[in-house]
Length: 208
Ligand code: MN3
Image (cartoon, rainbow, N blue to C red; front, side, top):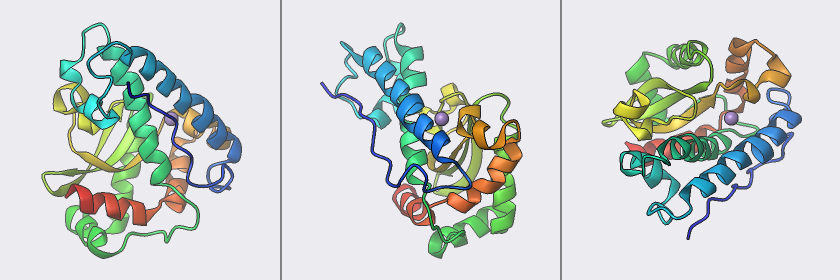
């Protein structure tokens, strides 16, 4: 059977300072993400989904056993979401997209600044816990948000939105509380300092 495993963080825990602190990154990666993985592996045990990839599992939740569906949705969702989140961040980013991703953002949203405002709004207006996403939908870019650990790849019926995420912002309090307390908008503004645009661009090329 396949077991889901915690992916190594591609940079040091303090690499995103001062925007996201080392303590937040350490707890988020080794405790929160690990807990999703442990619970996902428990829920997968003995099911026909054991040998599927995490992406396949969340895209195929409709076919999951009824008594496992909620656990798989929350925990494989949490694993997929955080696996993307660590990769689309990094130290020393350029601060802005380039090439065909930059043109696609201008085309979809009018300008890079207008896009940033849209994604920040999606994060601010997500009540409670969830994610703000930049997704590719039918070859075009869109901004959406999901509740809890839902992912646009789960599809319209479950997640309320669809698409392939290429950038995601975790707006659960555990992602920002130690640095920003209740000030989610400040965290969202600071997030732009840690985006790895090369990674987002390569995900865009693969998804479009
Ligand atoms: Mn999280």
